[in-house]
Amino acid sequence: MAPTTTAAKAKMPSLAGRLQSEVERLIQRNLKGLEYLASPAPIVGAMPKTVLHRRGTLSLYHYHALVQEVYRVPILFVMAPTNKAFIFDLAPDQSLVEYLLKRGHDLYVIDWNAPVRAEAHLALEDYALDFIPDCVRRVQQDSGVEDVTVVGYCAGGLLATIYASLHADGPLKNLVCFTTPVDFSKMELFRKMTGPSQLDVDRLVDSDGIIPSQVVVNSFNMLRPAGDIAGQVRLWDNLWNDQYVKSFRRMERWVAETLPLPGGYFRQTTTQLLKKNALYEGTLKVGGRLVDLSKIKVPLLSVVAQHDHIVPPDCARPLVERVASRDKEEVMLPGGHVSIVAGPNAIKRMWPKLDQWLEERST
Image 1 (cartoon, one colour):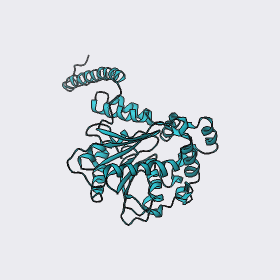
Image 2 (image 1 turned 90 degrees about the vertical axis):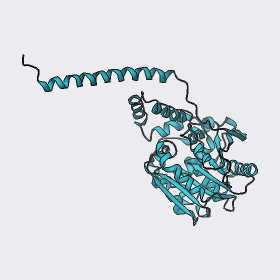
Image 3 (image 1 turned 180 degrees about the vertical axis):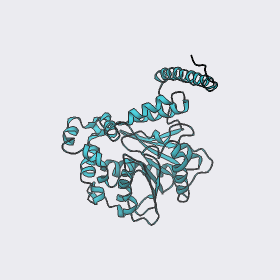
Image 4 (image 1 turned 30 degrees about the horizontal axis):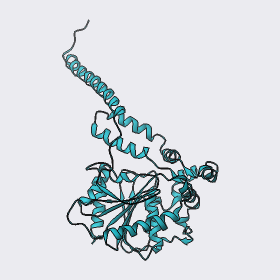
């Protein structure tokens, strides 16, 4: 037998060390996996707040101030009807709400509850001509300030934009939209999924009146078929990283709490927006009134996510082009549909930009 060389001897301890490290990591991963499965759902949305108003699917919250002096103009956040608003308030130091409160902003948030069957008729008219105006009035009364800034995320931005168009005389002070769809022809996969050969919208709505949350989740999952698998692989690779696991679980909870939708809203958005592209074409009517984006003249900030697979940049970019505001800005930031609002990328880029923009227009 050939004698073992000096180089080979040097490699053997190194190889043994790596092997031992991998074994220990595997054991730790398995233990962490059991811990993950047994642990309760993570706490989210913990910033102190008061329920200002609640009726049916609508909840309006006012967050408690964290500093002595606040900006004069209050801010009303509008969440998309498909999701809970705790995406704005995931955890300490990972909360957009906390960040803005510490910067001196006065925050109110429209959050949604699962609609009951009696609310199956709810449509764009109810959101843009009833819910949002009602909440704006309550914010005015509670704050004692006439002006209100409205911030909308995704479909919440869509509703806020429709509201702004149909309330051109105010009391809207500023409009901020995150990843807000306008040109629905660019949402090609969504359009295919809701085509006549794929989905009978009327039959689905008429069968129960409420669109189950799983239908909503499946629609989003179809945009990225491998997304769940890739997410689980990344979780497996990072099980010993407690911070990663906590962040993953918060996002997992947010997705798991996706809301069912009123059939009226689903039917209207599918037929009028996805199929007819009525908002972009200038033919959308809400409550018998034409939604004309050129009626919007208030300061506008539109935040677009460069890698958004739900609302692609080309879908969101026409918003700034169509409004008549003299003070308008579009910001294209790296990130996806969710990471543009929550997570390290948002903390580093979007949150400071939002605060800076609001600061100059909130006095």
